[in-house]
Image (tube, rainbow, N blue to C red; front, side, top):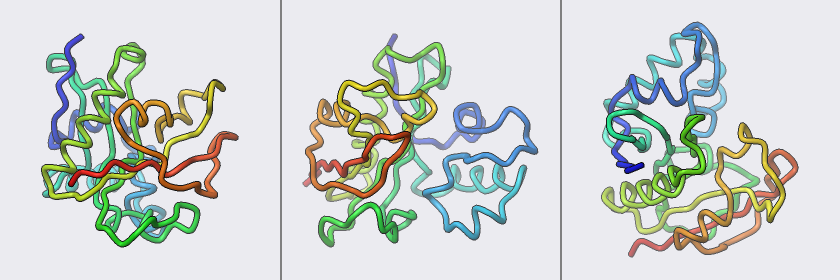
Length: 190
């Protein structure tokens, strides 16, 4: 499998990866860390899709997509931390005052897992942040050791995958997801 990672500008492909089966369903759309809680609660059903469609037309777009040929197989949410809920999140500390970018969600389609897609997404998100002038990029993965993680709850990624990509441990967090602590990992892009 040859994976190509591109900016998430094609709404139909983003919908394939993070949208609901029913267009009227109110699901995450990878918005819960991106927008204020009040707005997230106000956006229902198709309004969420329209909001994400607008993000795909924005500069920068809301993340990156991994493709196997022309088939979208993976998604990674990446944006300036200041433009996300992580700017105010009490559980995820600020290491310093650098205008870092955050990488907080990785999704690989069933049938394409365990083929290196998440590694390609991390590398693609790093390149995307770098191309937009980010001095550093952070992630908040699960520190699960060798413990299994439910696929649904593995969206922040796993510490070992970020270590493999050159990220280093920067701080503990008080965030726990699916029984696993999350750590702050960082990669300097300067």
